[in-house]
Length: 191
Image 1 (cartoon, rainbow, N blue to C red):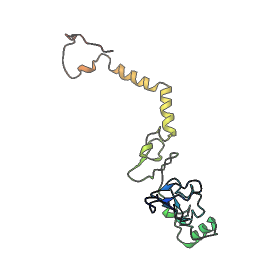
Image 2 (cartoon, helix red, strand yellow):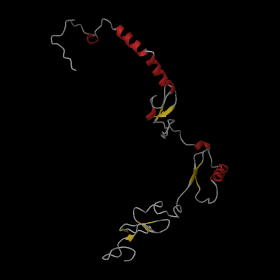
Image 3 (cartoon, rainbow, N blue to C red):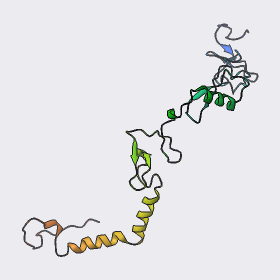
Image 4 (cartoon, helix red, strand yellow):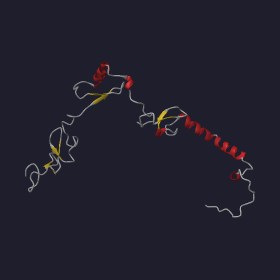
């Protein structure tokens, strides 16, 4: 048998050229680096240890000053620092083109724009809409203020003051002049 196919169809498919495989594949892949034929399992550069894996790859370096990406593919033998210095001296490095601000919450990469930015009312930090609540962005003043009011019982005092101001009033019968007699049907309690 030749490079592929079966006895009935000798030109159909090809054998994988990986040293441990040699599987007959009817939809073979040709590697762009070494020009060999591989099956689905061995088609990636990594799976068949291709020596020419980076022949078409593009490599870039990002300038920290202006956030511009500089392609380093054509500069064989030069270091990244030398390429960055050359870029900064060329006049193309403009600090005003710096990337847009991102949300300061750890692991959040949301770009802050006009429509998705929220400013915290307690710590005045600009965050994305996902982290707009003080508990979501670890707001320093918001967490301490709420915990201190709970600790000293401030909310309990406010509740008791509001309840005391209603003494002698029935909330359900405000604004109407009904008699204070009990209802004719007994109320049912659901447990």
